[in-house]
Image 1 (spheres, helix red, strand yellow):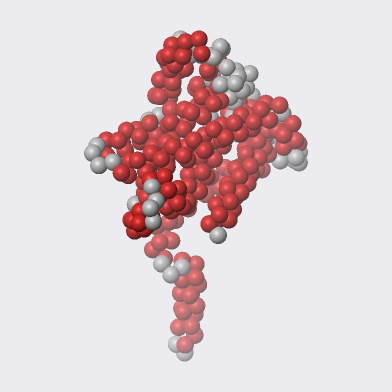
Image 2 (cartoon, helix red, strand yellow):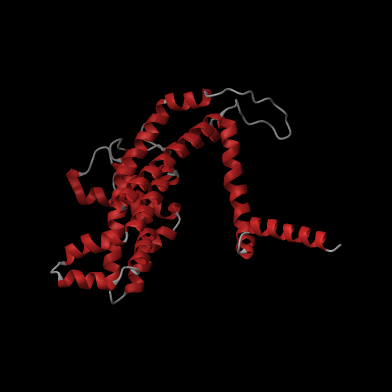
Length: 308
């Protein structure tokens, strides 16, 4: 008579264990963050995908309006829009400058800081301060440096570009790339510093025994040892470029001159919020996510291929 309830109770416990895993406490602790991801990221992205396939527009609160299915029309409009093509071209220029420069500078400075004995904490904090400072606060400094009567033009004199940096179609996006590199550098330095703590000292000692100099040790020991961190740095730098908005919005007044510093996210804001075309902006956002995923996947395959 008691066997049936016992079996049923055991089955329930097995189902609960299968759902929660071997460590149910971990699942419980992760649940709030999972809810956060679902509410803040998953639902908005799913709604954006839905909007991108419909004729969606903003309406008064409580108003019931139809949003007919339009298929790929919003995607066709986004792909054929000259401003969108220019924005992706701008981001390509940004990534070509920012990603290699960020990776190289972060690794070199991390190696240097790892060897510093005196004022180590002060130097690390100094590099990290720009990262935690709001862009709005430091943009004014860069405007002072790179405007027509700024410090950089005063130093360069007749060599300064005309028109000046931030109103020059050829220089606006490179200056933004340098700004983002400078601002984000402290974070990536910390990533490399953490990775360098796990590099065995014996590898450097063996290289010294073999007669390797400082450059050989860096290239043959340090660079391969932090390759996984390099992959992370590259992916995060790519994501930073894909999300570029604040810097062109503040430094060049919204993507100027003539759209030469506009980014896809800035175009999404202008078309979706300012011009009331959220369906177009949603389609552009989906395309941007897909492009970022493809580039990140290629980068991962490249790193894994070299590791193998």
